[in-house]
Image (cartoon, rainbow, N blue to C red; front, side, top):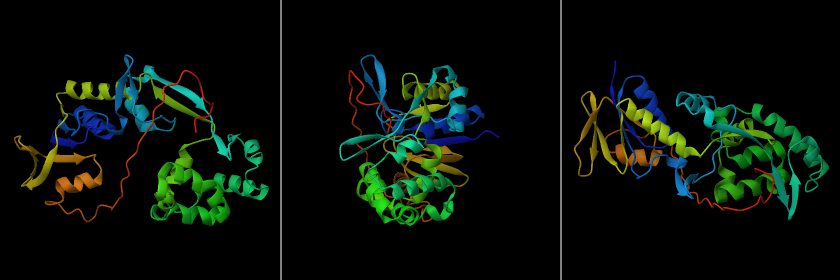
Amino acid sequence: MAERIGVIGGGIAGLTCAFRLTQSGHEVELFESSDQLGGLGTFFPYKNRFVDRFYHCIMPGDEHLLSLIRDLGLADQLYWKTTYMGMVYEHKHYPFNSALDLLRFDALSLVSRLRLGAMSLLLPYLGDDQQLDSTPTKAWLSKLYGAKLWDKFWAPMFAAKFGATAASLPSLYLKKRLGREKNVGTRGYIKGGLHGLVEALEKSIRAKNGRVHTSTSIESIEQHGDNIVARFDGSEDLRFDRIISTVPLSILAKIAGKNFDMSSLPKLDYHGVVNLLLFLDRTVQSYYW
């Protein structure tokens, strides 16, 4: 039976949710508080084209995303590139793409290199996922690799990406990331960036009579009998059979916290990201990472 459903958040997750629901015949309204759709997949105009604000890629194993791209008719806009990794230690550049590269990485002792290689091959198969989600990265990796490898190899890389919180990251993040990433990998991109994906999602939602609102913030949601009422600042209340949230839990708690029990939600710390984009007229180096 078709339902009236509200979606909070106009990022890729919210847009995809609204798209799939309208495909199934539901009456959908999506609400995005900013003036642009896309969330972390936003973009900006530059010299008659759109450029992604953050770096994103598509992996061959991203089955749900690839299915979405096909369903939107964008398969012919998808292309793949082979990418490589490298390391920099004390101003020296090292390729880091094969067992031979690891053996040549003289920033580590031979024993450390062998341990790094062996444990990295085993890492995706070690540990219980539920336990690793609450185990700090430093504790797990120091146990597997030893304190020296953590201090000299892992800690600097994590600190460069995550700052002071690097040691306390959930170990599950690294396990899943290494299972998804390869030193020599194939990464996919959509021609023109994520602008095309976001635009196609919005058009498809509207084509199925879904409504998409930008610059529209839901102030609160309340349960009224079988309905959930969304309240807006200065606008008329709206009633829904269901409301789906795709925004950070801290924002959801502000919207729903007074009227719904939020105690079961995990307590997460969110960190902002500053992403620097440089437009260059030449290649600086050949490594992706």
